Image (cartoon, rainbow, N blue to C red):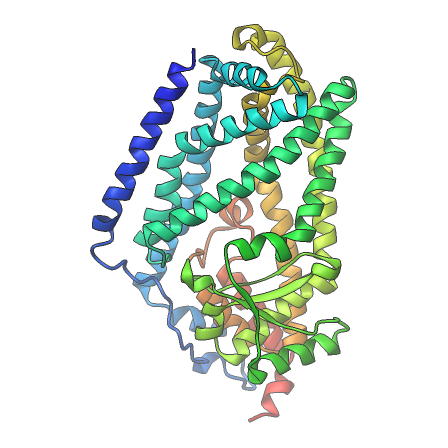
Length: 445
């Protein structure tokens, strides 16, 4: 009956325990560091002078990066291109496996034996589906999220704490995924003709709700957030906020160093849950000018309403995705539904097919999504430069982010794969801003 499912589960568990057993030996040698220089000086060609040239200044900054660090960062980022493909193909194989071996139909049958109450039945199916697929994709997850990150010196966790975060993610997925799946199947069963419209509405409202509660209730599951109290750091940031009409009263920091060496900051939430956060790696390694530049960038996201614009963009994309789902599911079920023992769109056994179609849509739309995000990031860069007036701090930040992003891609490569402007383009933008505002810096000499 369910012997094949149990066999796959047992195989996944075997792989899991082998990975745990092998993890200590894999980390017997410390991971190779991939850090750019912690202290980045303003090169001579980037210092203010009557003959200042933005291109020369950009090249001077890039020349400070050791060649081996550039090659290592490029290799890491370019490997991510292939992971986009492998993630898609691996996920597609798992979905087709669940459909063609009728495992999904058997999980539905088991859920129906547990309860005939449709909402609970849907949640029981979701529990089986998420646990089984998590086990099946675990080999790729552990390589991509653990071993590869250690190989490039970007991770700090040992296997146990990393696995603990994976279990937390699984728990969050069980709860939130169970709720949204239950709501969506309820819509499909009650509105069989227009389910794709109302399904999109439910998805938009649900994801907006998650964006609202995320900074307060979800992010702290994985990291500790605390108010930053160092006046040398906080006061310049709050001064920038007040000068730009931002009602920020606090600056937060998070203990990202327990997981990663990456330096970053972010703006999350909206309305009363909006939070500007810098991670402790940035706080520890960044210069005051760099921190101000990064915080100016994050304030740009807030002032230019990027969170709300992002919700609008995602909403349009969600409606388009559900329209594609409507036609894709109808075509696929008409052709293979009987073979897969799926009774219709309202049958929970259809979930792997839905996931497969959504993954195809997302894969195709990767350049579109990246371009939309990259455009907002460029806008925030410009706002941050005008707000912080720290072009050299901004260049330093771009170099530090270059620990895990390729600094100098080709234009087509950047269009397809980059969700932020490339490091070279960000440094050049900062130096171009400096060239147009030389009097601010000449007067300081």
